[in-house]
View 1 (tube, protein in one colour):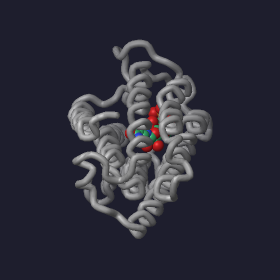
View 2 (view 1 turned 60 degrees about the vertical axis):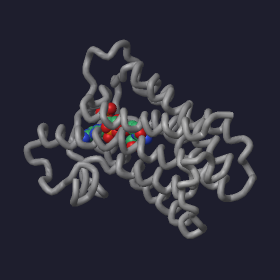
View 3 (view 1 turned 180 degrees about the horizontal axis):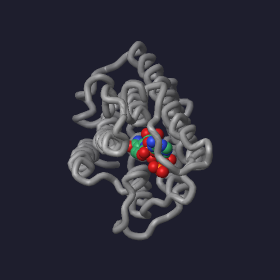
Length: 253
Ligand code: NDP
């Protein structure tokens, strides 16, 4: 047993700290990789190490909820579908031969994913309004849940489509960076991150608990500053980068 509100407050504090940190320091992997961050591991291994704890922790801690009712089983299935793909299939689709990432990034991502898998499975299994803070959560009904599933599917499709378009830029075997086009790249520089945030917002609408909403907050705290870094990097590297393309939110930012 744990103090539900304390756990949620720790999560909220971690999200705020992440927003502050990532606004100042861009995580050193991918195009923002740079020396001085300790030992590195091959990208594929790093992604598996980082993401595999999410479905494993979630599966382990969600055992009590399976089959209970659709309101818990559906969000649990959404969580697992995304993370099984992200942890065990996405790393093998990457087109970044020779690329490495700091072990520290993979390890900190793994630690977050254990925490996040545990807290989401636990709060989902225990119902929508646990803890004093949980009671603040509005009671959402079938309409909101259906919208949530649709938003999750839309965000998932956007995320995968954007990642595929990036892979296609290297279909000739190159390891170069090029200007992505088509799909939501017409509007923003990081539609994969936009899709990720929309997807977890949909999940939170279905899961109906405060832990799921804090996951949305944490994801945005992590990815919004990184989207801004990507956007500035593109603008600096490509003089003809589309002027009307925004960083993350179409037409706005
Ligand atoms: P990026 O968009 O930075 O890179 C994705 C892949 O595409 C990398 O292999 C990268 O290669 C390649 N790539 C990127 N831009 C170009 C380009 N212009 N030309 C050619 N190749 C390119 O995404 P991330 O690596 O940060 O994230 C990958 C996935 O993981 C995304 O779907 C993201 O949403 C998700 N994610 C989710 C997080 C969360 O908090 N839930 C956190 C981080 C990621 P290279 O490695 O050489 O840069």
